[in-house]
Structures are given as C-alpha cells and as structure tokens.
Amino acid sequence: MADIEMLVRRQRAYFETGKTKDVSWRIGALQTLKREIGKREAQIEVALQADLKKSGFETYMCEVGMVLSELSHMIRHLRGYAKDRTVATPLAQFHAKSFTSAQPYGVTLVMSPWNYPFMLALEPVIGAIAAGNCVVIKPSAYAPHTSAAIAELIKGCFAPHFVAVVEGGREENTQLLEQKFDFIFFTGSVNVGKLVMKKAAEHVTPVCLELGGKSPCIVDETANLKLAARRIVFGKFLNLGQTCVAPDYLFVHASVKDRLLKEIQKCIHQQFGAHPLENTDYGRIVNEKHFTRLGRLLDGADVKIGGKYHTETLQIEPTVVDHVSPADPLMQEEIFGPILPVMTYHNLSEVISYVTRHDRPLALYLFTRSRSHEKQILKYCSFGGGCINDTIIHLATSNMGFGGVGASGMGSYHGKESFELFSHRRSIVKKYNWIDLPIRYQPYTAWKRTLLELFLR
Image (cartoon, rainbow, N blue to C red):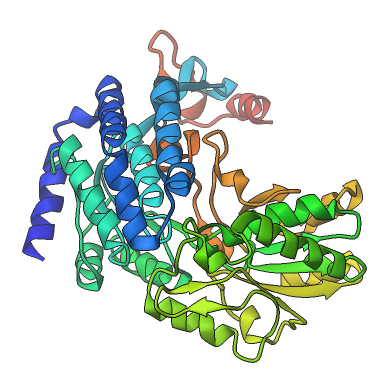
C-alpha cells in the first residue's frame, strides 16, 4: 500500500510541474512508445502465446497492429485535437471572445482485462498520454506473461513518475482503488465495473467503464447467408469467443435458420479445419475457472455443431447450440467463449421487443438486405455500437468512438474520442475592456429590461 501511495504522490508532483502539458512533449512520448513496441514485437507475441495461445497473425491483427495504428493516428492528429476551439459569443456579452480549452485531468488509472491484454491496456494509455496525463496501468493478473511484457515495455519508455505499471491481483486492485485518482478507465466485467464506480464515487472521480453484455446477432430472411455465416464465424470464434463485442447469441428468422446453420458449419470447417482442436492457430480458454464455467453452460444443451473439448489444453471447439429459449442458462449471462446459442423469430418486432426488454448490449449486429429492417433496428434498439452485415470491425478504427451504454458501460474512446475522454474541456470568455454595457448592473430600469429582452429572445 505504501509503495502505491508513493507512486501516485510522485505522479501528482510530476504532473504539477506542467511538463506533460506541452503538446510537442506528448507527441515525443507517443513516438517513443511506438518505437519501443516495434522493437519488442517478438516478446509481445511470445507473451500472448503463453497466456492465450494466440497465433502470431492474430496477435498482430488484434493487438499490436491495433495499438500501432492508434499511435500513428494520435501522433498525426494531436496538435489539431489540442487546439483551443472558438465558439460564437452571445450578443448580450458583447464585446468578447468565447473558446474552449482542453486540459488534462492529472493522474489517471487504466485497469485492463485479460482477453486482449496488450491492446486493451495500451489503447486507453495512448489517449491519456495524448491528453497530457500521468498514468498508472494495472494489467490483468490472468494474463501474467503479457502483464510482465507491458511492465518491461513501459519501463523502457518512461520514468515511473510519468507512466508506471502495477502488477498483481485483487490485493493490488483494491489498493489502487483506495487512492485518489483524477480519472479511472476500466475495462472488464459488469460486476467489477460496479465496484470500480463505487470506489471512484468516494473521491468524486470520473470514470469510463468499458463492460460487456449479451450482444445479439440478427439474421433476417433477406440476408446473404453465405457471407453472413463467414463473418459471424469470424466474429464469434475469434480469440475463442473471449471478445467483449463478440456476437453472444444468434437471432435468426425461422425460414432461413437451417440454411444458415449449414453455412456456419461449412465456414467453421473452412476457417478452422476439420479438427479445430488440432489447429495450431486456434487459441485456448484463459484458465480452468472459465473453462469449467463454459462446460456447465453446455450441460443438457442441444449441440448442433462442435461441442468437443480438451480439458488438458483448455480448448473448446467452435460450438453452435440450437433450440435455445430465453430461460436457458446460456441466455442468463454473457458467454465469453466459443459457444453460439441460436434462437428463432418470425417477425422482426419479436427481436426488437426482446432486445429492448433486456440490458442494452455493448454491440449489435444485423445481417439484412432490407433497408426497412435496418431502419427499424437502428431506431428502436439501443446499444453501444455495431455493424450492418458484419461483426466486430466497428471498433477497429480510430475515426469513431467505441463504448457502451447503460449496463454495457459509459464513455467512449479511440482517436479523437480518447483525447476528449481524458481531457476536461474548459469554457472561457475573454471580455474586452474598451466597452462595458451597463445593462446588467443595478439599478434595474424599464429600458434595461427592454434591451435585455431584445438580447435574450
């Protein structure tokens, strides 16, 4: 506890020197981070292989490459993001200039999960540095090799009074949440997110919560089934379904369900081979606890595709479960694994009713060629973000924010949204001295009231 308290105190003292407020200095820090990641790609790949059995291709596509892309975007655009923004001044405040100015919060905490342990730790850190903050990073203990790689990377880039890594488990999490930070960014489960928000409230600390939930994938009767199946299989079984925006369940029109499931089976074979558990690029469940949890969800289920597993390697085949009802165990919690439950519908209003009656999901995916169906889903269903005729890719851009709504989270980041998230934007009026309208000063008179109404209506 004493070490963590001292770390936060030192970062606060460094922030108060004003060094991090220089935009050129921030760009230099981001360039240093980008350069060091490039040097350590091999070590990062080894760490992710050890923690999650991620292939080198997937590590670059979903972790390292995403971070490098975000760094490039931020380095390129940071000067523009950091500029003051002039806004219109009301006539009643004549003569003056109005503008907003972005200021860093101060000392920030980034708590990251285990499923994409490199990318989900570093991407928010990029926004925090870009906005001019000091940062304490808490990687997940469930991905210890990646946690150690991140600690080594950050140590090679920055002094700990600017950016530091605190490794460990629940005890370190608890100690960190006892400190007074100026902003907390958390990615993880809903239950832990609630705890983070509760602890932050004690210090009136703003938070960004990137959580999860049961993200629906809807396939209507007009969809291109071959393409839908290919993209659903990619999005659902990437990282063995251990993705916060993975399609959690499939809602398919009854008239096309059988054909879609046949296409999904073909695509699983095409993407993972006839024996996915023998595929060297197929990952594993993060630990025995989650492997056992997923196994319980399959008890008594009508497994249509897959279902095999290896206890020794903590692997489960891409699995599709048919004839699922809303009351089944598979529909009571976020699955976070390679299991896809299938429900059917006959009218789109059934889907809309189901989605809107439950917690708002982090993502929603719709496969359709009907403009009318697309409009209905977007109008009536609330969700963090999503895709029409694809899955997952909406988060793979620095040009749009990514975040949840309601139980799936609060706050949005990536690109400009990250800069704004880690900044407080001050509103400032600069009043000129050559004229001072007397209208606001007492004594109040009828002619002043007339002028006031003229200005404000």
